[in-house]
Length: 119
Image (tube, rainbow, N blue to C red):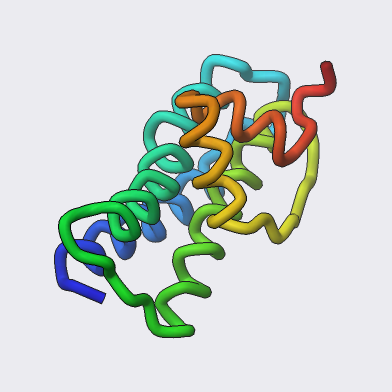
């Protein structure tokens, strides 16, 4: 993976860990949930989209791809925690990217993937 993507992914991953530790245990906090989608989930999925559709196709090693998906799932876990829901899910970054291309909305993608909040 190119340094540009690796550095961004490391920063997103570190930030997700920090956010997880600082979450308010008294949900729901919809404003915080939206902030997490803007700050972390959306940029993580966008990084994947950019790597796959940008000027040159970026090839992820297995470890890099696992870190990318784990980071995206960490952000989704934080998002769901804002609604008092524990996910510990393993969602596909590829599926998230396809939904993002279709919807152009990170919140819609998070709701479609996780079912949180319940509609």
